[in-house]
Amino acid sequence: MESSNKYSVPFVLLFLALVLFFGINISLGSVSIPLKETLNAILGGDLSNDQWKYIVWNYRIPKALTAILVGSGLALSGLLMQTLFRNPLAGPFVLGISSGASLGAAILIMGAAMLSGLFSFGMINDVSLAIASSIGSFLVLLVVVMVAYRIKDTMALLIIGLMFGSITAAIVSVLSYFTNAEKLQQYIYWSFGSVGNLSWQQLLLLLFIIAVGVLLSIISIKPLNSLLLGENYARSLGVNLKKSRYIIIVATGLLAGGITAFAGPIAFIGLAVPHLTRQIFNTTDHKVLVPAVLVYGAILMLICDTIAQLPTSANVLPINAITSIVGAPVVIWLLVRKKKMIF
Image (cartoon, rainbow, N blue to C red):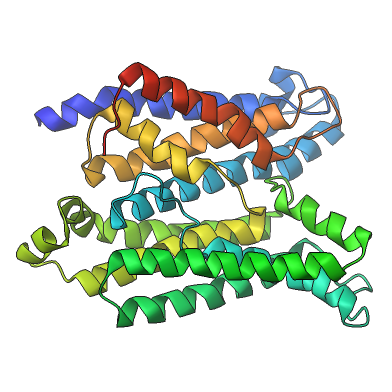
């Protein structure tokens, strides 16, 4: 009961912050909409301008919900990887799954141009990019799972994941060298990341993928807590390490791969949010950390997206750049102030 009371206040504050920044995010944009009119659009009231309701429901709310899902999923996958490898520098992309998604997008955009323009007649759009990225991440995930089933050394798996990332990056570099400037620019634009391109149908699919990843993570809470003290200790508690590692990798693959497929590669969130959450809650218990990183990641992503969209301006900055520019100094300041890292 003490433990529950200890963390109730931080959780309440985080949820209030989530509601606040969700409201701020949907209230600001290139089109100035009064706060009262935004609330009327959400609650189904009458608006003085029908276009505002369309903007709120078909652009701003899906974008804000996408930011919540992306931030939550990346933060959770980062936590899983840091615990599995017991490495504070591990993130959701260390297994090469995100690189696989990037390779899928690169092959569709740049490879198609090299193959006699096979997809050059309107075939490359947000849906086809999501499909190509999903296939790329799934194939890499499949290989990683097969490798994880065969080897026992977790650190060897980390190295193999990094090698997958290097291989896919090399292939993308070769494709970039031979492609034309227009296709290269299209790929670079995709690599900036975006949370504003999803339809309601795509959003529901992303929600389903992330929900499965979260469910697998909740199942893995006991093994995750055991792994913090080493694999031998986990075995002594009766944890099936091979099965647990398999579940954690699949959960991370679904989270990181699905998000990269729909929103592009987004840096920083997965690496930093678990550390920020540990500093706030001062614990390594995953019963607390799993829900905490979900909310914290959503808040941070909403803040970054609000900054990226440059309120009252028609320009939108790359979300991938904003997450690092805004977030990295915060992590540096927090760690310097605390003088130690909880892990």
